[in-house]
Image 1 (cartoon, rainbow, N blue to C red):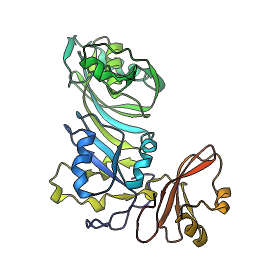
Image 2: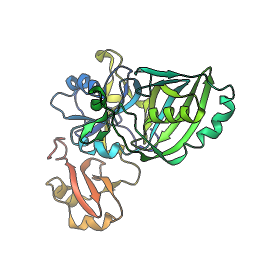
Image 3: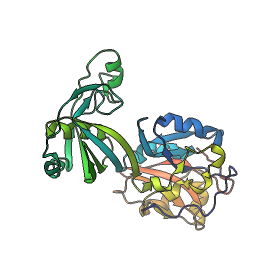
Image 4: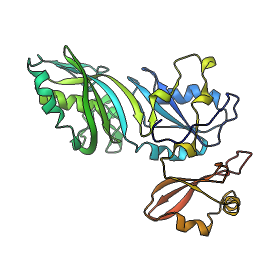
Length: 317
């Protein structure tokens, strides 16, 4: 897990879980993101669960499941760059911009497409403008776009800016190409497939999608829940929240500061060690690297996300 600090040395599957933790899960095709939470609930009875970065049922790959106080950082995890392996089918268009929808057109694929693709890819670099698919969760007029489509209406969706950090071709065969895309939150890979097809002059749609990473998290380290629950080794994948923050976002506190933190008080002496320009969550750990609290900062103002009471491992919030 590039960029993450060490994982727990051994978390046996005996419900001795960290209070605030993240579980990378490898979602199978056909499951919704909510399905993942549903099958995990019996494993973590009484623990609040949430996921960061929804995956469509047709997509597979990495889904971050947050436990307990970590659920308060779902929106922050969602902002991390994401990497996908996408297969794009040229010559076919659908009403959903993927093969889950109804085919709306077929066109011959230009014979010179392979030689033109490199220049077409260059138009998907850096900050670009894209229109979300009409069948998507984007809201317009207070309603989800997919709900408008189901009601027989045509949603009017606005273009928005997204960032494509990298796009490279992995494979080409027949009318399909496989590309790896690293992009910002809010990017629709279906829209990239649709727009690439329009530029090619033959139309295209997304034929398969797999998310391989989200920030420092990788699908290689995720729990495969396609296996029977009795075979899951949850403890080997579960990450205490403090180990999930990028390097430089952990501050060690002394014994007196630790005592105050466990009572929900941010020590005044700690303030100078929290630079005003630092934003986002910070883990506060004691000399034994035990998590005392997670705080979140915006414009120099810090608020508690989670306060841990110590060895008992119970959350005070």
